Amino acid sequence: MAKKFERHRQAWTASEIEKLRFMAGKGMSLKSIAAGLTRSEESIKKQAKIGKLKIAKAR
Image (cartoon, rainbow, N blue to C red):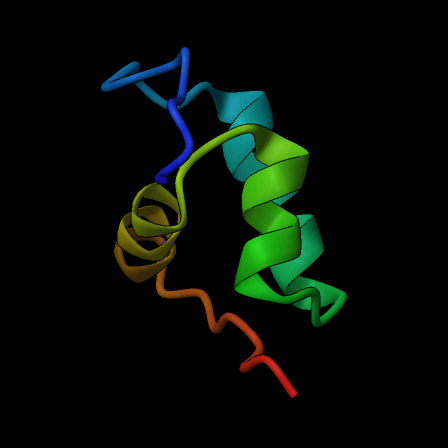
């Protein structure tokens, strides 16, 4: 069963984008970034693509 997110389709704030940049820079996985920001993995992927960020592959 998929997780239900309370923040469905809410706009990204500047502080969330900054956290995403920090976490991606540290090499965190997509799953851990999604949990840390309480966003879906798809949302993280989309925002990372917009910001031209690289997300580490799960090992």
